[in-house]
Length: 96
Image (cartoon, rainbow, N blue to C red; front, side, top):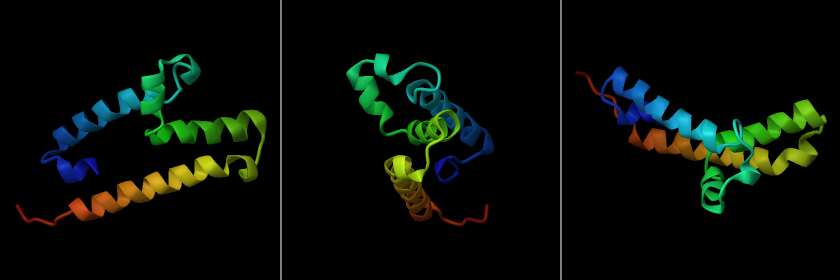
């Protein structure tokens, strides 16, 4: 998705860093989401890594299966499909 917006490789790298840093901070990876203000907690619900971390912690720490994590998996699949579809719509092949 980022590469469909950026014109150069440097712009794509800077945009990805600008996207990754807030994602890591708001997802619950560094700080517990329960201690975040309500608005920031709400924004974290729109970040795919939040659901990935829930699945990862459920599998590795708790040893649970898909029957307990199916909602997170559905959110991840739907977010992935949305980003993929947006990327397909934005993609235009150009010869420069």
